[in-house]
Image (spheres, rainbow, N blue to C red):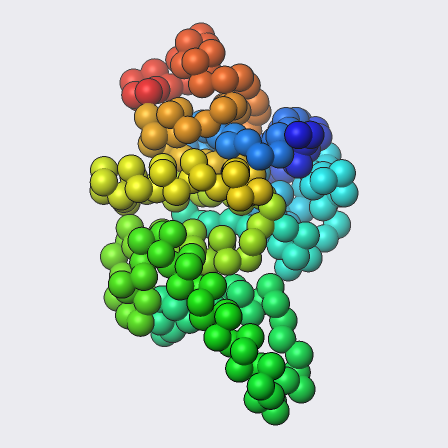
Length: 255
């Protein structure tokens, strides 16, 4: 399958604190790879470096062999990387459906003349866009909430909305930042079923999550950070028995 993402000797410092230090790993195309570690271990910083929200002090990030470090976030997104956030970033004044439509419009970028003139082609594209948006809402169990204001959704539904909007970008690589946080046990089961099917649709998943039981049941490979450095990498079975990982997670449920 080959590597879709490579992180090479990546470092980021805030003052005297190394948030990420000399970090290297790769993500295989079509896989579900997990990034775990205690709070403050550098997981979100790593995501922000990959997506261009932060610039590295040293090292590089390669996506399909192309360096990302000099690109702004919007250009990185156009290459095929989407993400969700710990705190859902939605447009509360818009409906659930409109939030997903925005992602589709961003990807399709309809012509200015067609938009202003409201040509027949514009209305056909609008109809297709709405049908596509409903498809993503159905995948994320949100079709019944399509016309509700996004601000009225509970946290669990907001996380599903962020996922639907990210999928509407048709990414090659999807970064999930604690997407299961705040979900009920039933919602987590539904989420797991949805995520399992995404690699077959050509989407590679790179996932940060504190629910290790959920994550270990889905991930094919796990990378463990502690104080900004990688302390272990391997399949879930090996990670759960790794002495350093057990020490770092002492007092927490590892699985």
